[in-house]
Length: 270
Image 1: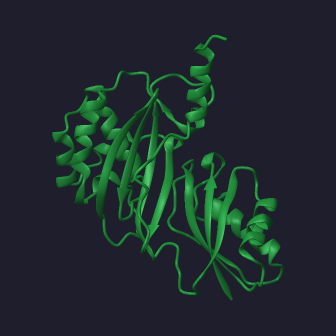
Image 2: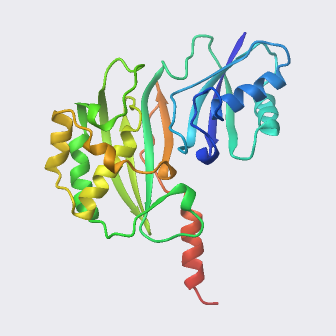
């Protein structure tokens, strides 16, 4: 058996998430279905670095593919993409060692959330459009409350598979790009709906409905209050998975840059 490292981008709008589920369409399930078609009759396995919620996207999900094949990585990439739907794309395939595991070997994960401060005709499936005026500086300051090792039980849905609700958050950084506010969250791992609830709480701070001290209260004691502010999945993207010997990219940007360009171009005069 050979093992390959897959770099995958996908639009999660039509899927119930990454992880395979009974009677639901998943990204992992689609990849496995296609791999089984390519490697006819052979046992294949596809495992990702972690699951994503229904409707959440990926700029670069990492998975490993195990198959009994002599095909070159580039041929495997082309064959996968020939069969996959347009909203799943394998960016790269690398041959890796037999013990590499996409989830267990991951050291750091990062997500980007996109908030649009204007109504957009192009980006609705990829942003959370907020009509209210947001205080960017207050949100940036409040985001620092999340950094460090904390118990995020108040920010997660119950999950029997999680052994602990403690998560190390390495950084939460806000950035403006035109009409888009980007929130990048970097951590050891993430709980179910954790990032979306962190974003939702930061938005309430930006709206002036909550002060940053409330975040500390949510981290210090268990409460269901953050669930009321869960951000929609449309604006969330799994950005990067970091393994031993790799570094997280220092730069990040909006996937809405095309829409921003269209808006700027429409104002120009020839």
